[in-house]
Length: 234
Image 1: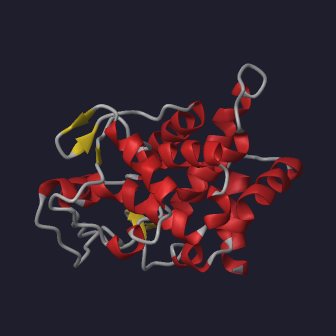
Image 2: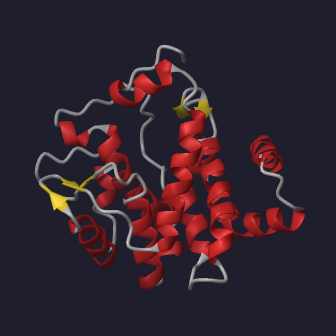
């Protein structure tokens, strides 16, 4: 845990955040950060873009989300807490995707399409305390589900569904499963949804993710891995 706190502080330094900003952010994200599943994603078991761990990618997304969000606080009815939580939860998929042995048979079940849905299912199961309020749940789930926009996301149905955490799907309360289904129905085309998040909290986080990801794709092998799942450089 201490080593991963140091990694977070390195990112804080990179973006020149003040002590007050760091304390404010840490108070919001720490309950998510300390979870064993998040800590696991700070290890080399989960390499996300090239040799950057998934946890480090998520933390940088979260910091950039904070930076992009500041200008909206006075202009809009904007919930910064929820935006940072979306950032912390958006990529908590189940299995590593680079050079992974996990295979799917159906094209729209590949990692790029299915991982937002897996992340939402995992988040609901691992952090149930965040999903007790109906309005908060809608914003959180919708932001996680559509963070890849304009890249589409796999819908939730019973047709050739291949999720690595399908067992956790059945443990979700019906009211939260209904939010998942409703969110994925927007701009549906067959097995995928082309919608962006309904909420500014999710849209800002999605913008942050694009900025961070483009910087983290270091070479041709990293770029090619986005399409093949194979990265010879790691």
